[in-house]
Amino acid sequence: NAGVTQTPKFRILKIGQSMTLQCTQDMNHNYMYWYRQDPGMGLKLIYYSVGAGITDKGEVPNGYNVSRSTTEDFPLRLELAAPSQTSVYFCASSATPGTPTFYSGANVLTFGAGSRLTVL
Amino acid sequence: AQTVTQSQPEMSVQEAETVTLSCTYDTSESDYYLFWYKQPPSRQMILVIRQEAYKQQNATENRFSVNFQKAAKSFSLKISDSQLGDAAMYFCACAAISNFGNEKLTFGTGTRLTIIP
Image (cartoon, rainbow over all chains, first blue to last red; front, top):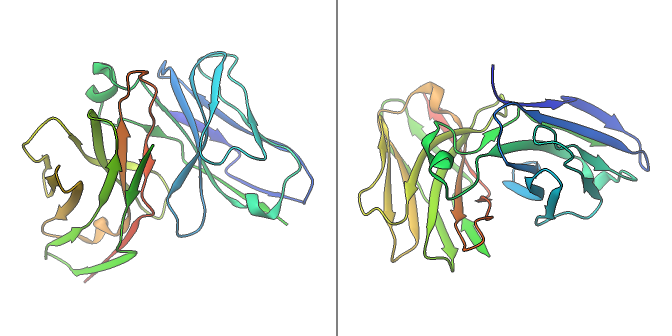
């Protein structure tokens, strides 16, 4: 099924460790996003990308890095994990905002299933 | 920049009754879109309904409808004939389309809806 795939679903890290959350989509979407959702809170944008080779910071980019070498993949890297990064991470993708394609689909923004990360 | 505010952290409704979830937003852009997303315990984000700001007519999707008050920057969600499967966290979101075409969704903090059998 077409959509956004995130791995891993769960991960426990020790303080100071690094890891990469993988995200891939097969809908040929130009835009991809990484959000984090803290308990009882809404989603906050970490980074986003408007196409291969182009990334930009969102609201809460500190402690994270991203790359976008292909249209399909948008990995999120955590360097020197801290307890404050304990959260659920969502990857999402969309067609270019403002274009007819963006609003013609059933889901404007297609989300992955989420990755629960705990830093101890 | 834009902000989305949901002032009701939790709501509950009797099964088969109607409930309204509130949302206010602020954006400096003239062209924008508003959304309600549902997040069940599975954590998946599911689009419930969307509204184009330039349209005066309120959007409806089966049992879900919105009350869009543009001047007041208010965007409430009404769920009619509530069902047990409607229990979830509901997020209001705004996407303002700037001249650069690269705006992204801003989410509210969510309202947890409980359905009472």
